[in-house]
Every structure is written in C-alpha cells, then in structure tokens.
Image (cartoon, rainbow, N blue to C red):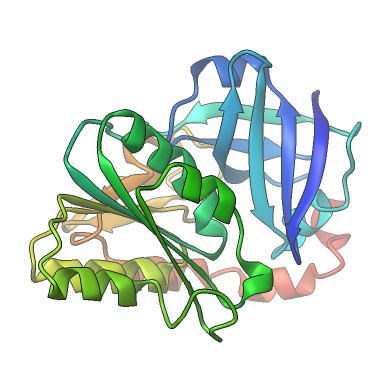
Length: 275
C-alpha cells in the first residue's frame, strides 16, 4: 500500500498528492510516469510524476478529476492509501545543454512540464516557459515554473491572467522576432500540442510532445497505448512518452481518446466501473 501523505487542491478539480513511494522516488527522472490502481477493483491509470524527493522517499502526482477513476481518486484524503503505484515507467527526458529551450504547458500539462524545465535549467539551458489555462482560477504552478525559468509567459483564454490568447501566441511572437530557439517541449491537450508542432514545423525547430493515450499495463505488452509516429507504430509507455511532435499522428490519437466516451458517461457515478 502507498500512503497519501499530503493532499492539496491546486484549482477547481485539480489535486496534488504527495505519495510515500521510496523505491519510485529513488529511480525516477524528469519525463517519467507511474501507473496507479486505487483498489483491487479499480482500473489502471497513468499519471506523470510532477516532482519527487529522493531524500524523503516521496513523489508528487497532480491530476484533474475528469473520468470515473480520477474523480474517485479525488475523494481520497491524507492518510488514505493506494493499492498499486508501478514505476517509474517510460523513457526519461533527454537532458543536455541545448541552448535555448521553450517549455510549454497547457492546463494540467504544466505539472509534467515543471520537472523537465527544472532539469533543462540545471543543465545550463536558457529556459523560456509558457503556461496557459482557460482562466486564472485554473492556472497552476506559476510560482514553481517561474523559479526554473529565465522568462515566463502566461496566457489565459479569457485574459483573466497574463495575456489573452493561447500558449502558441507567445511562441509565434518569439519566432517572428527571430528569437533563437533550439528545442521546444510541449505538454497539454492533444489539440494544443498539435498546434505547437504546426507552428514550429516550417521553421524546423525540434519539438517534443508527451503522449498519454490509453494505457493498461505500462510495459508494452498490451498494445493499448499504440500510436503512429512517422508512419511507424510506437508504444507510448516504452518507446515514449515523448516523441517528435512533427511526426505524431495527432488525428489518430484524438480519435482513440474518444473511444470510451460512452463508457465514461455511463460510469459518472463510477460505481458501475468498480464492481
């Protein structure tokens, strides 16, 4: 059992858990994820590791209450425990001194971007970060992102915080003013990552996106997380989760993400999903 040590509500429907998981904390690196199961009747869901402390033996998980399992997860409190936390899984982010790196986080995607931006900064890169949300109430981890960024740009759909617009807008401005950019890392909704990749494609700026499609076992055996990258089938859990954004078939991924909408609606009370 993996004990929940701290629970914090970062914004409406977005929770942060500090989990006692010393073996995971000892090995995990920026960009990796875990798969958890709340109880023996629960489904397995992937969550990116938002932070970790090797000294304390803890990991931080940040999630949004969207589906049946994340809503059930959000009802847990400090002192409760999870049945399974498997990880770290996936390939860690390639960290080198590339020069100027733009880290973009949309919505809940800010959480997994944070440890990556910190690692880039610690490797000597100039880190320019862009974070965005629908409104100021849904904006998360501004303080943390500012602490690891040479520049931080904030956008909201309604203009209630930072600049009104999308996260791609500051990126477009940087490119238009000939800002040197050696690498872009984008994590967030599929449509956002696709938009970032389209902006950088014609300028041949190496762009990485982190894919979190349907996953089950997390070891490449089930094939549930298959995705098309450069015309080849890849498994996000073992080949990723990060891929070249210019090669990802986002249309196929978004279609797969809609596969279980009917079942999710049927499980709104999540009782039927966990009998």
